[in-house]
Amino acid sequence: MTRIRIGSAPDSWGVWFPEDPAQVPWPRFLDEVADSGYEWIELGPYGYLPTDPARLADELAARSLRVSAGTVFTGLHHGPAVWDATWNHVSAVAALTRSTGARHLVVIPSFWRDDKTGKVLEDRTLTPTQWDQLTTQTNQLGREVQDRYGLRIVVHPHADTHIDTDENTTRFLDATDPDLVSLCLDTGHYAYCGGDSLQLIKTYGERIGYLHLKQVDPTVLAQVRTHNTPFGPAVAQGVMCEPPHGIPALEPVLEAARALAHQDELFAVVEQDMYPCPPDRPLPIARRTRAFLRSCGH
Image (cartoon, rainbow, N blue to C red; front, side, top):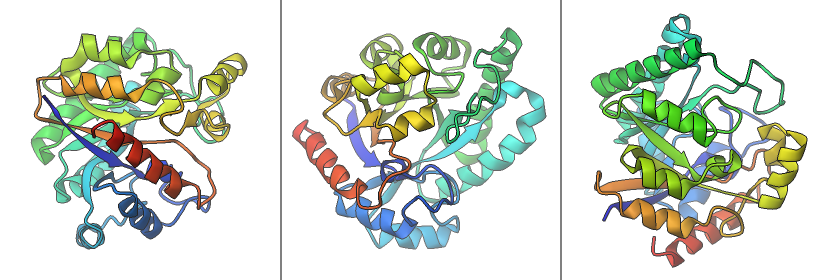
């Protein structure tokens, strides 16, 4: 049975950006995530936590925290023209991630509409040529990150990106190299976009390299779909809710993940999107969520 390691992330404290006056300061996030009972965290948006490796190591050690992954944002469907700028961003994050001892890099595709304002930035459907550029360059990214930094990329299907629905996620998996590219299955985003996490684990289990634990409120989600609400405003309306009050149920997802035989351990990181939120809201939710996951045996 695969060992599940539970963690949390700045996202569960309403953090989406390196700097934003609506977000809690990073020392408060670190203090509160440790106080909530978590030992593992993600780095969040690059520049939110200290980027000096020595200072970051000291801050983590002072709170007995460890890092499971870093996060990067890419627009690889735009082709070779964006490679250099993408690699400059990825290499900085990968270097910091490696310095912490983490082994994963979460890759989030670029948004076709702005996650904060909802402004449409490009067509929501990729052309065949763009699909080819996306998958080819993702393979290249996986190889470069692995060879240069010893990290595994895990691509994150995400609302309002081109890798979102079951159809687009499976198309992406079928076109990428399993030796270079794994999947970060975010249970909330996958449900938001109409996907079934249990079915994906059943059919593509060998590609699952990382989990984000998240639930959606089905009542709010129905309204979001009716009005075609962009993801950012949908989050502000409470579409992502506190476990165990939403969908999908996390217990069967975690049990299915434990049965995966292709790896010894699997990170399952809690992410409840709450941007923006009052600064006193995240800590009680984090404590309750950690207690809930313990009650599930994790």
